[in-house]
Image 1 (cartoon, rainbow over the protein chains, first blue to last red):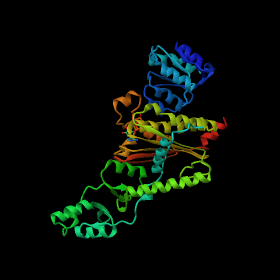
Image 2: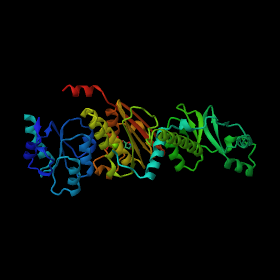
Image 3: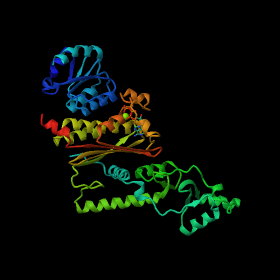
Image 4: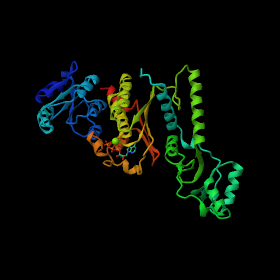
Length: 114
Length: 315
Ligand SMILES: Nc1ncnc2c1ncn2[C@@H]1O[C@H](COP(=O)(O)OP(=O)(O)OP(=O)(O)O)[C@@H](O)[C@H]1O
Ligand SMILES: [Mg+2]
């Protein structure tokens, strides 16, 4: 099992919403997709969600599947509304400059080690 | 505590809820006058006059093959067709309703078609009743009065129609077409209700995802509708009910990958055609009914106190 903090560090991600104690939340798996339909079909628990979708529904979907945190990949400008919604939901939200593929490549070794 | 709703919003929500809980079978007139193809227009006119009815179905071994209305009789008078067989002058291609369908389907049918009455058929497509707007009004008024009476005796609390002592949470949400903003409200509340009751995370996830899929389907594919959550000690019951356009081929819609979602829905991240099969997979019980132009009603039940709960507790 991995803690969230080292995973966020390896992605050089920016914190958009970091509720108290986010660093120590435990992550069991990573799921990367831009299709909400696929995220809803996934079964993993304590998931770190990687996506480049920017709709409000991404955060609701994360909530519905009980995701640990969301990393928006491939992005520079994140709509303020999204950060606000994450704060309201108490959901840790990050933004990484990497592409989805590169983000997965970096997370791979960490997830395998755990 | 759930937020207080506007009274008028509350009233029509309640009607929609009632319409989803009653079946057409519960409100239809069972005593039906029908004629066969060989009866004359005059026979029909006599039956109409003697029984004060304004539309009569024509049947062939119990299957509806046409309807004769007062209007058809008036034309027959003018054209001197009164001695002709009804088969020659009846209206064909009659729309029927099925007795199993929720009352909301009949309400959609009345608002979409100019007809004043619909023949009701059973699973074998045999005529079993007729339904008019009057039937619907009477049934709704009766059900509302029943609820009012219960409210008076129970000090203002509205109990769900299939009233159960163990009901823990009961609420209906209204969902409008393309209102993605509202999508996820019901599932968020469901998640919270189950979390505070210590339900296992796996079970919460199953119920929340099923609920969310149904919310989004109403928003993305229907003209609008309602979603009702009912929680008791044993299970979560999610009922999604909308007022059209209905699903022409339910089996096809239940197939993974089948979707009619447009580009805009797809741009929101939906539309892979996974929602309905996923909801079925996550549910302990699942039922879907749909009538073209009338609406779709989906029920999903997720049991609480399952082995998931036990195995999670023992960890
Ligand atoms: N309430 C509804 N009213 C009318 N049609 C519906 C309704 N729900 C589903 N459908 C039809 O069934 C199809 C399949 O639904 P399903 O939920 O499985 O997939 P989807 O919504 O298209 O995509 P996804 O759920 O993966 O985002 C839809 O594309 C639509 O044609
Ligand atoms: Mg769907």
